[in-house]
Length: 360
Image 1 (cartoon, one colour):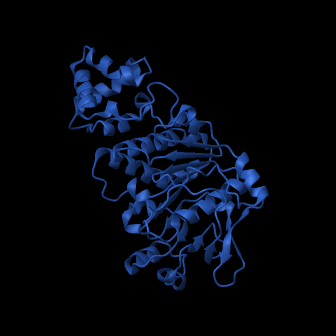
Image 2: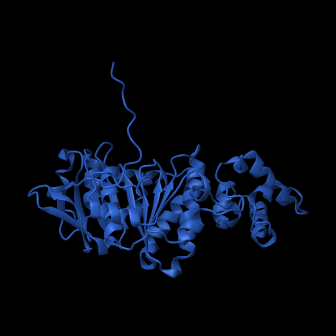
Image 3: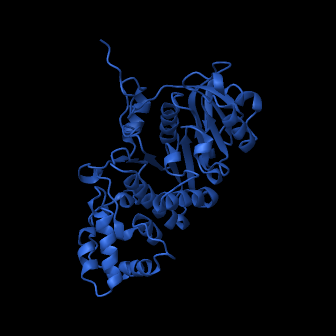
């Protein structure tokens, strides 16, 4: 396979269009308004990454759009379909069975993340926060189900208050916890070709955010191993909003901002997909060196993108409002030169879909 990945055809000449596989070692910002074909086009590129590189993918998938990345379509070229079928793709789902279950171990989460789940402030709730610091060193059962009972029976009254928080917030009732079993970080640590983390089946934003935070915390904790991963965050505004308003949302945003600022040197590269630049934290966008832009009608958003991504020619940005579905501007390190592209066809099955309207 070549380091040049075919993604479609050039809009102005119909010649093949390519992206540079080796330049995905930069953060990428992927943007396009609803209906632009953003998710479909992203799938085209992720398939090519799987075909042309050994770069492991970790995909945070809030709408279940990439859950069939392991299933080639009948129309896919035979050779490419065979290669995609041979890739090690793990799809983890809430309520899944066996190794497909999407689970998190609460007791193994970063202390600040556990505090965010319990809405604890290290200053305002100093005594409870300090008590939680003791849990990892004292709690030896490795089973989240027994945690509340252990806290209730502890001699420290602050532990009793932590148990009360767990019950009052309903945290132990979440269909999320691993109860001491295999969890999502174990799968990520096995470094498959792609780990698709289906966040679309959770009943609450808090469970989605907790899962994403557990994964990103683990990647950051192991950053010195310099494994090299492309972390794809679809609908990234749900995970890194500029106005995060809960402790959990703020903790998740702060972790993504930290990875955006420092992750590149450790081989943690972000690909962030969203509808509008204003929906994503500015300290994340400013760290991106690759731009993929699909249809964008807002002149304000286009002006903002022009200021952030000075390497994207203004005359090409100005064409974005007239893009048809599946058309995109690529600029930055992963494009030999700024180019307008008509995206090619997906080779694997799509996941999420629009709600149909019945015809009488």
